[in-house]
Image (tube, rainbow, N blue to C red; front, side, top):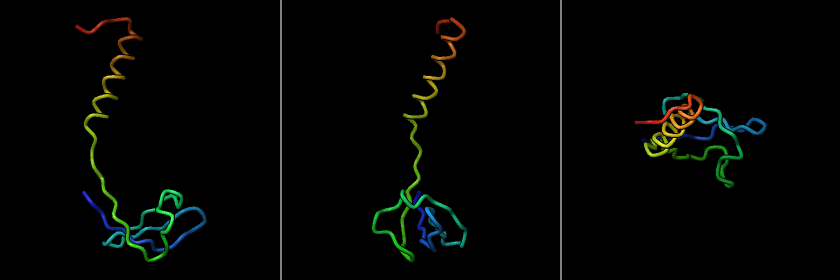
Length: 73
């Protein structure tokens, strides 16, 4: 999923971004490209990461089993 956001303005160390629907998103200025300036259009891509989710679940399960002193069957 991709979103097109426009840099509306900068406030201190934050960037105020606007969506195509006029919604506002506050984003850390230091997490933008160095050449970013007011009026620039940025493309944000949002994607899930099933492998990381699975790894986190497995880690949580391992910790819980260790705390409970049990083993998986």
